[in-house]
Amino acid sequence: MNKGHTLLAFIAGAVAGVAAVLLMAPDSGENTREKIRQKAVGAADKAREKILEGLDAVESVLEEND
Image (tube, rainbow, N blue to C red; front, side, top):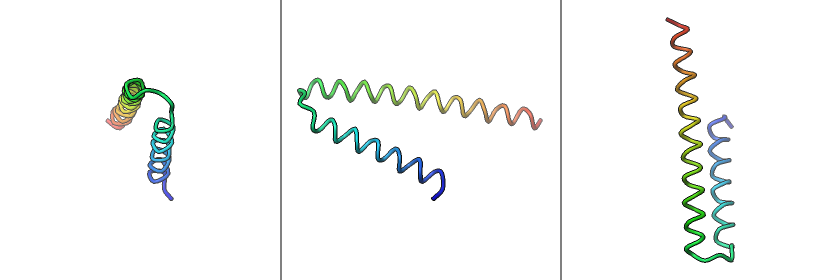
C-alpha cells in the first residue's frame, strides 16, 4: 500500500469516527451544526497551511535547480 492510499484511508477513518461521535452526541441540532462548522473551518485552515508549506518547498527546490 503506498503512502497516498494510507493517507486516504486514515482521513476516511477519521471522518467516519467524527461522524459517529456527532451522531451519538446528546447535543441539540443547532449546537451540533456549529461544532461541525468550527471543525470544518479548522480543517480548512490546516489544509491551507499545509498546501502553502508544500508550495514553498516546491518553490525552494525549483530555485535550487536554477
